[in-house]
Structure formats: structure tokens, C-alpha cells
Length: 161
Image (cartoon, rainbow, N blue to C red; front, side):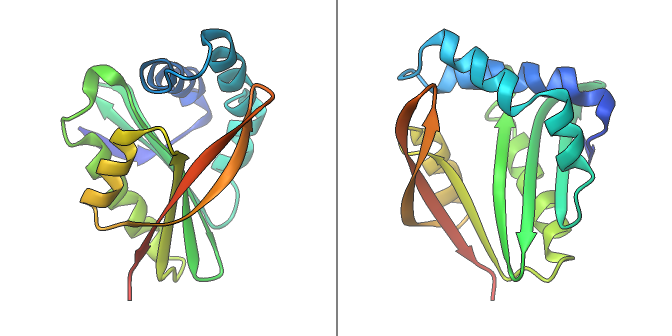
């Protein structure tokens, strides 16, 4: 497995990983809603814009030359947010998510971060177990609109100091 910075050439595969993960994870969302959301949130221009933004780390995990996971983090002041963390369902439970997290954390600590937050839909039990297994604690919740409907997001926090 190789963890490396994402490039514009990775956009199609990033969308494929996001789409497969969303379909496998978020049972409460209609298939059409998932597809529309992935096309909106992971469009070419949006992905390229975040890949080059200061204070941002956007990483992909490759297995045998194929992108099978990705993560995107942003640091503001002393707090880093894990904006995205996905591993293709065919490659989950192989340590890829943990490797992505460790590299993202290291890259974001270079920006003087001392706290990490991760957000995911409250319904995602696998995300809860993943983040809690890394030492995060659930500290808050918020709302996100997907497909014109409001969904509760769980906020997980990891204090680094």
C-alpha cells in the first residue's frame, strides 16, 4: 500500500471510491441522492480546488497501483478537520483507513494543529467505531443537508496536547 498526495489525475477514482462507499454505508439515503451528492461534492473543479488549498492535505491510498481510499483534512488555526475519509468497501478492514489517518494526522500536525475533529453522519456506526478506536470522543453534533433533507452529523474530537 502507498499513501501519497492526491493529484487531478485521481479525480475519477476518488469519485468511484466515494460512490461505492456511500452506497454501502448510508442505507437511509436513496441511490439517486447518493449519486447526485457524489457528483456535486466530488466534481472535478471542487476536487482540484481543495487539493491545492493552503492548510489542506488531500491523500490517496493505492493498492497495486489502484486508488482504494482517500482522505481530506483542513487546518484552521490550531484545529484540524477530517473532512473526508473513505475506503472502498472491497478494501475495508485492511488497515487502509488507519494508515490514511496516521499520514493525515502527521501532515496536518505540520500546520501546528493540536486538536483534530472528524464528522460523519450519526447513522454511520462503522465511522463511530473507527474514530473511537483511534482515541476520538464524540463531542458534538451538527446538521448537514443531503438531497434536500437534513441529517444529523456526529462530531468526534481528538485532543493532541
